[in-house]
Image 1 (cartoon, each protein chain N blue to C red):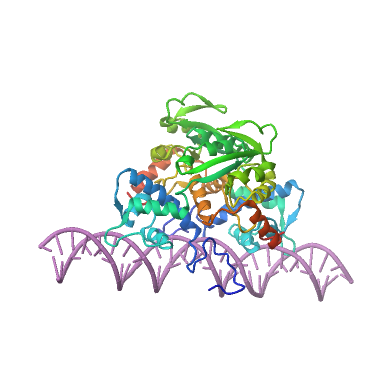
Image 2 (tube, each protein chain N blue to C red):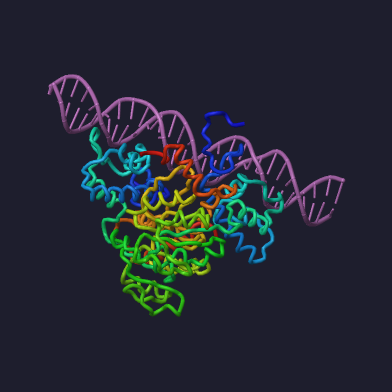
Length: 244
Length: 244
DNA sequence: ATGCATTTGTTACGTATTTCACAATTAGCT
DNA sequence: AGCTAATTGTGAAATACGTAACAAATGCAT
């Protein structure tokens, strides 16, 4: 029973249960890919302990992640690989074709949508847009690059709900507004800026430079060691961190 | 003074202070880019409240993030934009040229290292490797693609410490072992697998499919709304979520 | 059929991160 | 100089997330 005035920001399908944490969703995608591999290797069942051994993710974490959604396993036995794989796919809605549009047909955008894993995971590119007149009309893969100002009109046919945004930072917000107006509900943003969107729209940011900067931080400031000193450390410690 | 037997896993420059959380480092990169923009716009000083207004990041969060490193601002005044920008750059070590190598000269890898933002942020690609014999010897940008088995030998000259890993999942671990042996200390991994590395090596994972899957989850299961319903919601609520 | 070894689902605990709240500091104004 | 308004830096409170621990469930062996 919903109390009037309560804020219904609990994300999709507001049941009674607490919504799954975002890190859980991220791991779910990892589990899915892992299970796909297992199923190809004809593995029938797997235990959470075995998942930990093979992926490095804590077994309790794995079980808890799944518990946000339903009960999947049999005590004493484990999880049926194919069943779990398919049920996770349903949760993430990657069991059905998902239409994508790309905005920004530059180097990065073209490469991203050219990634063959996309089709394999049923993400389907249906249209490509750009705001650079030099590019409009040219082909990208099997599609024609269209003027981004037409995105609303064009998406009335496709009804894609996910957009990949790979435009320069300066145009990112402007393009985002067009996407929102075109019915896009989820944006994968590669521009290193915070987008303003209505709270009905989900954004995930991927920033290449940010990732590199975090890595850069962790490099010690001392004079660069040559490769050998690392090897020596390896020998000292045995070798790998964690697990076998 | 270091107590014997203490575990020195506190990341770089083990001072007495607690190490900054990783989320703080990620935001630091965001602040840096934001400050670069401000400095180009000739803004002299900025307050944490104004940062919140413009980036959406909580003002206390901003101040606390900075407090892990030093005191940067003047009470009653705020932060000097140029000074803060440069000090964050020093913290992240993006004030100096950082050498990078790329492993995996496919679509994605080529596009990533072709991104002009890299040079602007002083990340310098010094070598490209692949394990596909068809590609070895060919040029990529101004470099020749080399056999990845030679990475140790070649990196003895360059002494790059950061690697971008954009190879298929199956070869990712094998290549990683070569990189570690070659003195690489930080890896930006685009393959959707968990890499095993010694704990002297830092890994950041970027998975395109994982990001899309998380977005896909958030799409409600109900029949797809057309673009107009979203617009109606926009009108109802005023318009944007948060801030002006 | 009963007991044992295994493994789940979940509650309780611990750690990490974010947010709040306020004393301390600064610049400008009178 | 002293007062005021603004804003920082930070300990304490709140929240989110991860890990451990264990009762309940299952299949297998006897």
